[in-house]
Length: 166
Image (cartoon, rainbow, N blue to C red; front, side, top):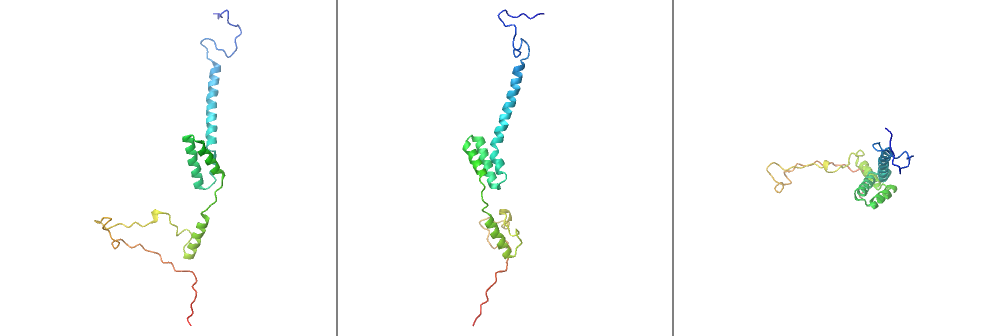
């Protein structure tokens, strides 16, 4: 069967025009390119969005956590000032202000005759729990019924001046 064209239609149609009942190849190619472009732009956006976190990953833990929180706030609130603040914080190298305290603690441990790190206090987990005897409430429990907590007596290693009596 021969195809009959309308007399007003041009006889040489471009290749991108699909005939009746044929698959529109140009539309399929453009749809695939559109999906790939949306994925590429999304990946670029997420990569750019995590830039401050990746920069702060090498820094101190607290600085990294603050930058990460600022990044999440910027992502969920769409307030770009959080992202800019996180980027600026990631660019600045914060000084370690805890080293003098660690040096002092190490010196005090050495003076007290404790091995380094042995006298460290981790927090509430190291605090001894004193429980009241059975049948008493917190109001009626007295200090006499509580068990004694041993305390360490560390002799002073600081040289004493000799006092001469005349």
